[in-house]
Length: 410
Ligand code: PMP
Image 1: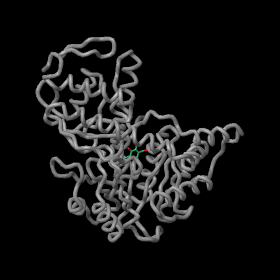
Image 2 (image 1 turned 60 degrees about the horizontal axis):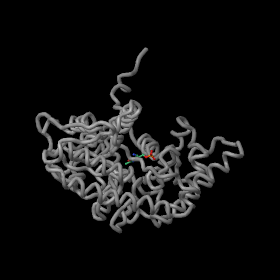
Image 3 (image 1 turned 60 degrees about the vertical axis):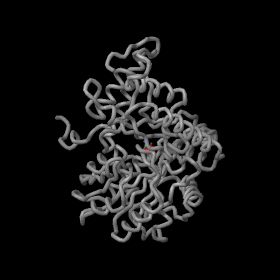
Image 4 (image 1 turned 90 degrees about the horizontal axis):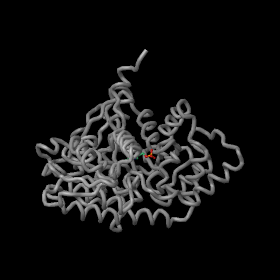
């Protein structure tokens, strides 16, 4: 009876855990501002709803092929051509239950026990745990103090004969940074030369600001997708805000794609056909919803960066994409408040009822991730409360929901 030692060694997703904590507090009537979750508040695009509803009305909701419905694979191929200028075949596409499963399947398909996977800090919270679940070893590259992106040389130094993959996430969760074209090019070429997989988590590649475009790995990868070691991960969760539909995909060389599909055939069988049809509706539907979401995130980015600049001790690097930022709060750490990012997140939740995620969970201590995926009003309220909690020159009293609270620690 009981849980295996191995299962006990895997941590719960901290962001999922925070969501649950926020939900419970709200259930108790507390006024919680959620700057923790990466989930836009928009409605799914009408095209997605219509396509899924049409299929639902037939009452025929059935299994699909493990690697995805042929019609949805066509949509993914169209998306890849439109956004990356790359033509791939249906054998290169694996449709998964969210981008999360695509990353896990890819790792499971390429790793043997003891293999190493290089992660660039700050990294998405799930990567190290997924690597461990494949009985492999995460190797973290930490950038120099004050930097949010490691250099190519720093990554290169972490590579050993056991390295099987490097995971690259740009635009980056949690920092919002878009890796430069030079870095993407160097990483892709290096991985291909060494026969190491470059897993490009491109889930935020359309959510970029200030008129920039996220550099594409395919500008540097081998032209033949079957010979290339690049694996591109994507999905509908962020670009269209369709988190609950649980649809993602990977583009990989045929061997890896086939292995990923085989693994999936023994775990989830396939992605829900309703989800795939909804995603198909989104990809082929009008693009104005994507632009509306992107520009509202850009506006929120401006609001949060301007607001944080007014909190003494906080240093924020302006995000170039996503809906996150990773300010350095180390100037706010002091006795009576918090000693590290975890304690600071807890402090902000207990005193100001603001949910944030400690930088420690992303591999960078002293930082805190704030999401601005919610409404502008919510972002502004969160900023007001953070300032009240951490800035001695802010008014001592604040209204949190129906209560008036007085600061007695600064
Ligand atoms: N990669 C990154 C970097 C993410 O932030 C997320 C979602 N938070 C995912 C993958 C997973 O996306 P999905 O919801 O499609 O599984």
